[in-house]
Each structure stands twice: as structure tokens, then as C-alpha cells.
Image 1 (tube, rainbow, N blue to C red):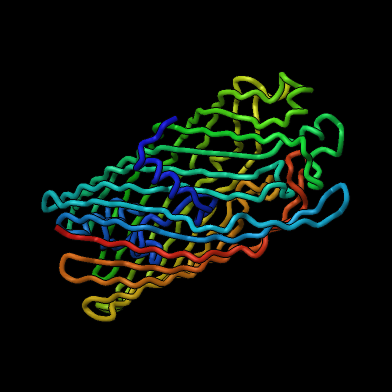
Image 2 (tube, rainbow, N blue to C red):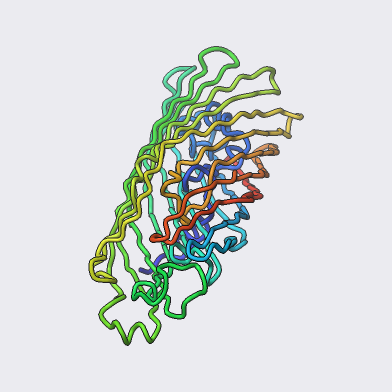
Length: 430
């Protein structure tokens, strides 16, 4: 399928190791990365509509905001060969990923705002070296979305604003892995991690959904002076993808089994989770605000990954099925902002983000566990301009799991996971 250049850029930039539960992305705005509670309950930037559409009422005039979030993840995987007892170690490819965003908000009446957001709410990416021990489960994964969000906000009273909008999403997924043709033929133990077999067949599955639709609602409440409350709901998005599966088949395998491993059309689906986001912020002084944020991600929507093939790559394998059985999870953060003077504001937060992965079905597709995120941000504002910067360090906790050699997963653990991330955005008020 041919993509427009802008869409291709957005998709390639969005495909990064995710920095939220599962492969959710919560990095839609620079100040939101540094202080999520403030972005949900108070607003102040056009990009806060990513978290709560009602926050547009805190932005006067017409504002354009553009920015990018960049990160470099690192994670090691260990596994034990069930046939020899050999301990293997590997790590994904180290590279920087970029996730851009763009927002436009405009106050069209005293009590009415309209907005538009371009961003990515889901993303996942990893690639492992050729011949690595988990190649029969995954060698590469890219999951990317490009989301367009038209939004409205209405200030019902001096203390209540209601917001709502749509999310129009393009979804793109690539899954690659090797198939142990020699093991299938009984020439060696099936899915043996080592040595690498010259008869391995490489499988590349690519799927896309031209238009998946979700919706968002939110409220922002100031019940008493200095107290701010925010609550937002982002609906589940049902992705129904179509595409193709292609196979790179070694000559001996092709000669012996010419009817196997044929390129074919595929279809499948993923139900992305819904989210509840709530926050409370209190202004202790005119310069100091502190708040808490709680987010629930409904990942129990993903019970399995099913890919149906028009032509089976092996007899009896017309449907590729991988059980996930993920759980609903919670994300907690505490943070705040401190105005240093009329132009500069310091932001900081700590976030604990649980993992939805069921360890009974853990695999190398999403190699991660519970995360701890330490963020620091700095904002500058003068006249019509505002510039926001942010840095965070993310620690991914170690996670052990039992192997399933038939699926190419072996007894082992994820270990030594961390990432450094930066974000920068600029806003201009017309």
C-alpha cells in the first residue's frame, strides 16, 4: 500500500518502544510528560487536549503548538535453552525514536472552544539481531498509529467545562519472526535456540486499518478557590486490519516443500484499551501547585492476537493465534509546578506504571514490565510565545517468566531495562 509522505513520516516516527502500560503512549504533550496531573485538571497548553478535551477552556485565543518526544530504550533478555541448559542473553537494537505532535485550539466564543490534535496514542517497536535465541517468537515488531482528533469544549459555568471529541486513527503493524523448518521436519529439536539453522524461513506479516474510530469526553471542575479537578474518558478503539504475509524461503526448503510457505493475504484485529484519567491539583500559593493523577487502562480487551491467512503457510495453520490474556492496570503519578518568576516555570513528577502482561503468556513481542518514571520539565513564556522542555528517566523493573518452547519462548527474564527521553514543544498565540 502506498502512503502519503506526511503519513509515512508520522507512522515511522510513532513506532517506538512504548512508554505506558502495554503499548500505550502517554507522551502526547511536553508539559503532560512532566506533570500529567496539571495537564488533566488545569490545562494551559493546547496539547493538554491529548489528556482531557475540556482543558481547552484554559487556553485563550487561537494557539498552534508543535513538538516532538524522543527516546532511546534499552532492555536485556535472558533465556535458557530447554535442550542443552545453555543460558542465552540478548538485547534489542539501540536507536533513538521520535514521536511528533501538533495541536490547534481556538476560542470561537466566550464559552466555546474548538481544537484539533495530530498525535500517536499507541506505539511499539523493537528489533533483534539475526540468529538471536528468541527468533522463533519475534525478530521485529512495529506497531504505530496516526491519530486525528477534532475536539470541542464548552464552559457551562464559571466552575465547570465539558469537552468531547473523536479520534480517527490509522493503524499499522509489522510482525517478523523465523520459522524452524528443520524442526518441523524432525531434523532437530523444534525451536532449538542454537545453533542457528540455515533452513530457517523468515515470516513478515504487515497489516493496516485505514480508519478506526474512537471518542473522548472530559470535564474540568474548579469547585472552590485553588482546587482543580479533571476527569477524562478515552474509548476503546477496535482495529480491523488487513494486509499480507510474506515468506523468505531457503532454496532447499522450497525444493522439498513447494506448496508450503506461500505469500498470502491476511486479516486480524486488535481491541485497543479504553482509559479513565483523573487528577486533583491544589494551588498552595500563586506560584506552587501540587497534584496527583490516576489512570486506568482497560487492557483486558486484548485476550489474544489472531491472524487469519487466506492460504495456510503450513497444512492446518490457516489461523495464527497467540494468547495474551492481559489485565486492566493502573498508572499513578504525583507532581507539580512552581513558577520561578513571570517567565519561567519548573515542573516535576514521579510515575508508577503497572504492566498488563500475563506472565503465563509473556513473550518477546512486548518485552517489558512495571515502570518507574522520574520527570523534570521547564517552561518559558513571553508574550505570544511559549517553549516547553522535558527530560525523564524510566526504569523498567526486572520480570521473570516460564518458557513455552513450542512458541519460541524460553525460561528467562527481562532485565536491566531503562530509557532516557526528551521532549520539546513550541506554542504561538495569534
